[in-house]
Length: 138
Image (cartoon, rainbow, N blue to C red; front, side):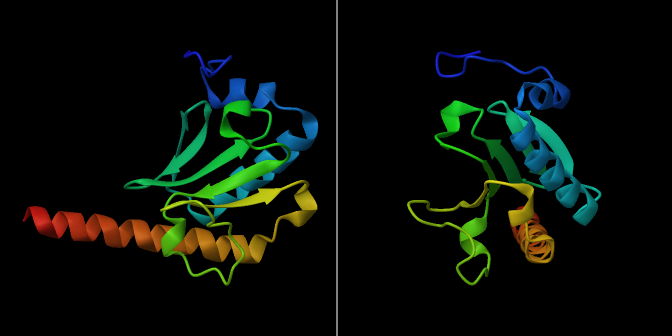
């Protein structure tokens, strides 16, 4: 635990148990969507929130109950390489060099089909970056 974070979750279950019900519902829906879309994805806690990895960090879920993320309400879904995603203005890319986010106040705001496309794009970017790096080391 550091001076900015008042909690130190030991597991995803600890994290989920900490959340208020409305945020928990959003987080669970986003987690399911991510895992269903990319079954081989790995989920780990970083900064006390779930991050999702393949070769590199792809996504994260940051609820407002975790205050050091700066979100006032709801839950933010972050795309680690969001600046490279074609999203038609759906994602918030303001003040960010690489990441992009979408904030949700309730489960009904989650557009499964659009988010699935954005998650697929993230995996394609991840694959391309990994392939590029691998080719440089040969």
